[in-house]
Image 1 (cartoon, rainbow, N blue to C red):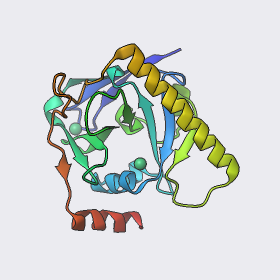
Image 2: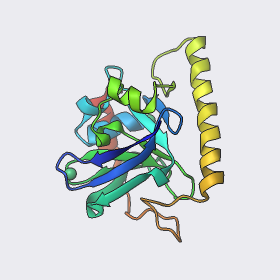
Image 3: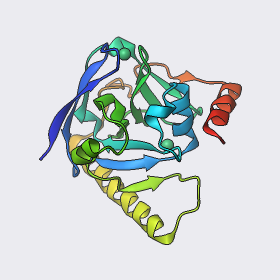
Length: 204
Ligand SMILES: [Zn+2]
Ligand SMILES: [Zn+2]
């Protein structure tokens, strides 16, 4: 069974809906890359977004299922590195929404559960989108079993991406221009010094 869940920033200016959520329509992953950790510190939300090992819970979905219904004027994006993903957030109160590729077209959005009111792998979030299927960019050595599980997750994700692309065509909603497939906002970039300061906060 899939459900529609309201999207809301903490001040209430940005609202929306994440549709058709279930364990089969999404891919629940954990990412511990530098970029995700810097981003959490950039938003001043490390406590809300990162677990004890610096991992962020993300659920990947077809962005056609993610709609902003009010406050689009508050939605902005940033890049931790110049060619990194676009990280979309509510600029009004710094609530993360989702991460996308730098250009539209590929039906992919990695949503941070905080925008639907849940933190990490809470029971509620697992009930909604299923358990974490793999962990990417871990900063500590992992065993063979975990490596296999992570590879399985990536294969599952590749099939999902392909299915979303075949079924829905090129993707642009809600963060790209339909014609040019360029992002609707110019991404905010940070200087090398700012990035170094965020990395230091994240303990790199
Ligand atoms: Zn807000
Ligand atoms: Zn990451």
